[in-house]
Length: 376
Image (cartoon, rainbow, N blue to C red; front, side, top):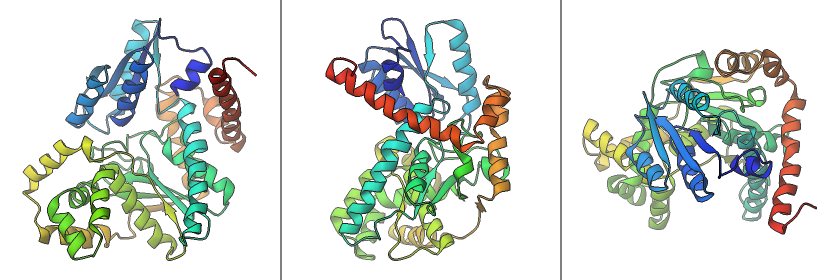
């Protein structure tokens, strides 16, 4: 997002303060990139996020504003961004939930990476050279844009969005709070092409925390090695690449396999969005809440959480459901954030999304020209 705005002259480190509204990971990235490009950077995130997030953001040199609430309190973040925007004409808000650079990156880079990966896996005897389904929980709903690219390559490909059961916004217009940091924000983001989503599935938040604890703590790792025969080096790698939302994504992929009857020969792709280094304090909270996990508990969790995913909390993307998901955008983006009904209606046309995708070519041209020292 910052690259696009830098290339088009919309931001200038000599004048502008960048504001990054986030529930954590995006703010960490904004702090790292913005500060290294010479910008004054402010990250806004809920006070209830993990302590590691705040420490990382400050360590990268950004200022932090903590708003009330936790993962599901995004409106409070928006309110603070408007306050900053109105108080200083040099504030530039890089809203991940709204700015289409987020969508374009995942459509083009994440999506095409998965297309290439399908061919690599087929060469290893895994799958048939295609991705059958793509699962992603929605935070900003940037990552799930990769599914739009996959569906262009394989028209019968399935795009599956994931939400917390405790805050099922698209599933039943719900509200609440939950513990899957990074997803489920009580609104439908502007950049989410909900009209292209094939199913919505909800995952229990505590299942994600308990499942992560199995992967990262020794009793669970011992069960994986000794009971299930997973090689020690793979167990160790799993312990490093998963965070809470990554476990959520895998549970959604398991649910997707059951729901669509996918098995050997099929490939479901999902994303490990962050890692345990941002959740040690959350694991300590879970231990304090429930007591230390032993091997018996770890085994029960593997069987009940990973092997026992049920076909509940699933809604297919019928024409009616997709229209309902789209209509929910009105309450955030027209009533609160200054979009017009005409802009919202324009998103119903697939051509709107194709036009946003087509801008990738011009952005690539500007990147190459900047690296080469001049426009070509």
